[in-house]
Length: 64
Image 1 (tube, rainbow, N blue to C red):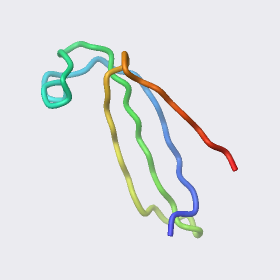
Image 2 (cartoon, rainbow, N blue to C red):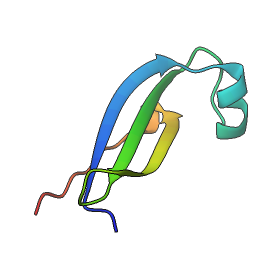
Image 3 (cartoon, helix red, strand yellow):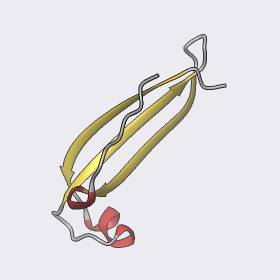
Image 4 (spheres, rainbow, N blue to C red):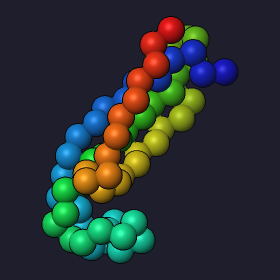
């Protein structure tokens, strides 16, 4: 069970390899999200890296 997660957001110039399937040109501004989900005893359960066009980027956070 996921107890916590850490996300890091950064920006980079998109590559042709990443841009083609996502629909943006090489060199376009891209947001990169890296996420590590951790168990209650801080063991990593999931690692994810996502990319998307910076022009369509939107971030929403809910804190409970």
